[in-house]
Image (cartoon, rainbow, N blue to C red; front, side, top):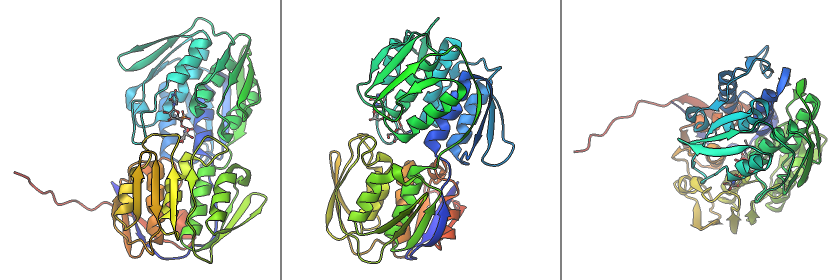
Length: 427
Ligand code: UD1
């Protein structure tokens, strides 16, 4: 096991380049199951979740090569599996993204139900409802969602909640259905638009993705294509917070500023100066931080995937801020660890009241999930003294070489092997 060790207190300076988006790469990789022919993807981030998707797709018979770093070639022409096992789905919930493609391509899919996780119950009932509307018969057997359909037929599907991966699954299945489908109350996240662009290059006919109404005209078959994965908006936001929390001056290069309006507005309100030029964002903080309230929501509102990082920032802001989480029911796992650094946070239901303190102090911490780990690293960068973050495998799921990128900005951060623990015998 590895851990990250940080000596806090250095204002970050310099430039870093943003990697490809995890949440765009994963669905586009899953979409390769829909087509005959080779899908060549570039700007694919080197992440644990991407590796997990490679293992899952290979298990389903997709031939995958990596001709060079950042590039994947996927050929599902000979794919024939239809089962995503519990072992894989429990390590990565996004494995559920093979459900739509499998039922559309093979008329059969068995995908383990993901179960709860650190941030909430996370059911997939809306995914299943959408596939049923398209004509699939669904049953739950031995912990698996089993879907069958001799033919999928276009339908009008209104989602109870604009679930991101649910919208993607239904959109992928509808691409090969007979006739036209409409998804109402669809997720508007940029990654949905990105998946639709990739599917359209495969020959799908999808209109309106990125808005809350998506129209899909089913086609007979899909073929290979080449696609460059867009930059990761959550990695971008995380580095912007790193600049702000350390009182630094950094430029985040190769990003899409238009995907981060809500985060940029809140950072400005908190006292950071932000300059945007094409695909670069420069953030500088000279004065003190001010407390601002944040409420997460579906895109274009403030992303739940940025909540933990923004809370780290608010722990050292002047005044009190209320952070409201509306997307997941249990996404305050980082609070207990931030308290160990001297933060003042009170959680009541889905609100966290953060009273800014003068200074955080370094401490040994435990990462609980992907974005919580990012929040702890950010807090460690600002804290006085040494912070260690254990269970760092969470961060490798979604951030490419985070410690290397932070080192390039001047942070005193390193990765090391977790030392052997003394075991305490209890009687
Ligand atoms: C995706 C992102 C994740 C992000 C989340 C919210 C990927 C791979 N992951 O996750 O990083 O945090 O969007 O922006 O893109 N829900 C139901 N029934 C369903 C589906 C969802 O009740 O069938 C609920 C969930 O429990 C949750 C909320 O809807 O409370 C949002 O979940 P959803 O948008 O589905 O998140 P994911 O697609 O899993």
